[in-house]
Length: 243
Image 1 (spheres, helix red, strand yellow):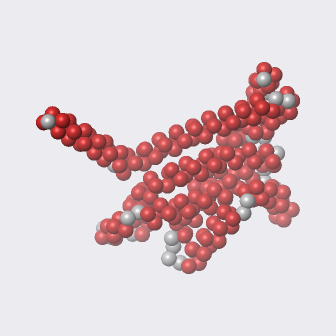
Image 2 (cartoon, rainbow, N blue to C red; image 1 turned 90 degrees about the horizontal axis):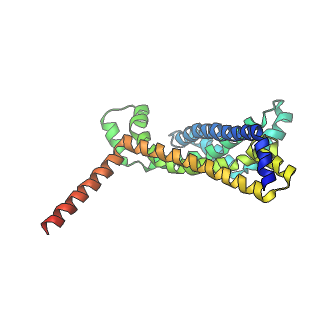
Image 3 (cartoon, rainbow, N blue to C red; image 1 turned 90 degrees about the vertical axis):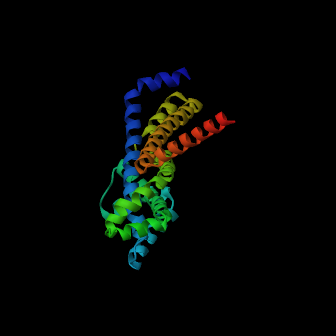
């Protein structure tokens, strides 16, 4: 075990570079997935049959095929067909974005559909245009409901980044694997990986929880909950004092 950690310290620049690749793949893949989630999710609610059909076809294709195959196709099969070769990191970002964007689109569609019908009617009564209705009334309410599901997808995306090792990307998994090969410390290497990915996942979860609280506060949900709690506490205190 001491050999493993001493070698890990010696290879710290490579470890830092591998961690940076992992974070890049996670953040950039998540941003691409977020954009595709809203594009495909909003297309799914279109009145035009063709637009809905395109959205459904894309979503079902990328949900119904393996992320492994999508990643290998982009890295190995696409260059001979198109003449364009993507870097391993870019392949990972595109594959993660397409795959998780397809799943995220269902989150967007479901959250928008769950907004009470009265909110749509109120926006219509205010004579808001369709785009303003969506931006000012519907999406702010739907966004709060999307965040927990998006958090789960983000953690899943992070846990898929070790797949980059399969296409020779120098991510965290690759660096730890190289140290394992040099020291023969298999148990320590994979325990270290487990701990590293747990810390990263927990940090992302905390950030998303902060985002969720901020979104609720913007809608006044936290304030309402606190007011209700204070009101109940005051009522209990008065009742107890009277008794």
